[in-house]
Length: 102
Image 1 (cartoon, rainbow, N blue to C red):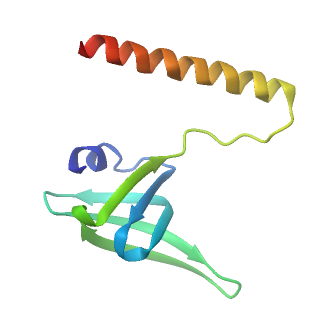
Image 2: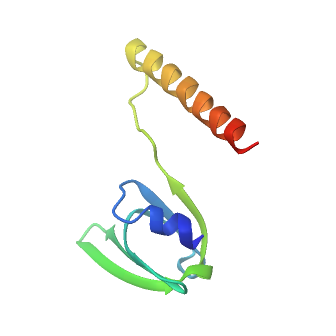
């Protein structure tokens, strides 16, 4: 988990499932990772205001990491074609990665 978090420092579209927060924190900006802790920044919004938080938590408090690769509107034929091509490329890359590890 520590290595993956280090790879994601400064990367966009990272979501973290933090056990003590009871849910996903979306679009976090990972700032620092050491052997025990991770520091990140995220925003929360209500009807009244928007807040920016900076949190440091134990790495073992992170249950899952998700990275949003792409968000496209539905319904457009060209976009659907691009989505299919992108999916095929991801499948090829995954297969090549698995083949190189064998």
